[in-house]
Image (cartoon, rainbow, N blue to C red; front, side, top):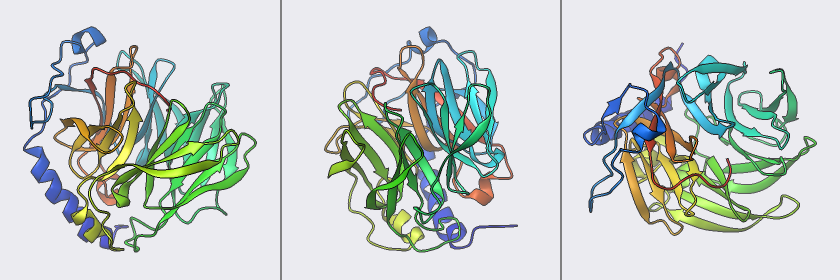
Amino acid sequence: MRLVTAFDGCLGAALASRDRTWSLHGAPVSKAFRTADDDARNEVTMEEGQPTARELRVVLDGYSYLECPRWHDGRLWVSDFYTNKVVAADSRGGAEVVAEVPNQPSGLGFLPDGRALIVSMRDHRVLVRDAAGALSEHADLSGAVSGMLNDMVVDEQGRAYVGNFGFDLMGGEPLRHTTITRVDTDGTVTTAADDLGFPNGMVILPGGVLVVAETFAARLTAFDIGEDGELSNRRVWAQFGEPPGTEDVGEAVELLQVGPDGICADADGAIWVADALHQRVMRVAEGGEILDEIPAGTGVFACMLGGDDGRTLYLCAAPSFPEHERRPVREAQLLAVRVEVPHAGLP
């Protein structure tokens, strides 16, 4: 049964059109697994006015739709939406299913004691995975959110900040702004911020600054995190053109110059941004300057710095986003490419 209505016609067509444009600039993809030493030979210079040319390698393939990658204890954890699995991949290319989440896993994070927190999207819960691999409820956000849960970042104290869609994206509802919800270590749920245009990937920069990608507002927005977990001093960290100014999803996609999705931070204070609309990741400075760009030749929806030295950039890639296209097939990949500046911050 096809779930998508307006999303299928408008956004799907828009994504397909943009995909054709950017595939002309796609980087070569190698399926050979390489060590960090091998990857270090990749060229990392950027010619003026041109995206950086690097070789992307395939770490994992044959998945439905990968999201929310996290580097933790020598492995890359990632959620596979439509198989309802969380997978951890090691440096040798091996993969282990570390959790099965019937209501669709999304955001991942880790408590100070090492236990994993996992977003369960469709039933609005955050689950906790114990050392034996068993899942239990950490928090129920049903009374605090207006749409499916989305990405999550967990701070050093174990507080989780969780985004949600705010509307039925796949069902073609009009765009609505929504909230970030804070989940304290005891499971208490509090609205931390509101009026956000589809809060998506989040990072916490050194010094306690939370940055969230607002996909349908074309920006990264920053908050200071107080000692009690409160968010304050809201400001624009980077703006990518004007926000669309429409409630129609298809029209918004056509107007967006960048669709910021998953993000991660590096040691120079820059943020890597997966541009969900243009088959690329961009390295962005505060203020919005694009410092680097890596075209992928396929859709890129999330990214994470990891590896033993923090200089491997992992990309969650798939040909498209719409659920009815991704659920029945296994075309999603986890890609990797070497970069110069290592990981910093959380996750």
